[in-house]
Amino acid sequence: MAADKSVTERTFGVLRPYAVHLGGTLKRGDLVILQREIAGMIHEIIDITHDTSGRPQEANELALFQVLRETRRLPSVQDQIDRLGG
Image (cartoon, helix red, strand yellow):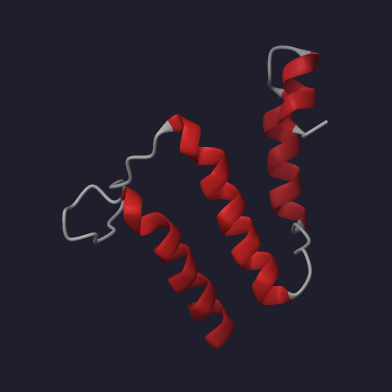
């Protein structure tokens, strides 16, 4: 449980600069992130989860199924490849 709290606090630390409120508080839907900063922010969050666990986390079956289902609905094969990171 302590590791989950650490991950949560560190993730909030990454997101806090993008909070709309001047006080830096986060509430649902309050983030304003420039498009050019999204990739870096995502990598920071991924690094936080990897640092905590010591190894990359496996996706659960439901998450994998949902990604594959969403990818299948994309209009072109190239979009599907891009979505899957290929």
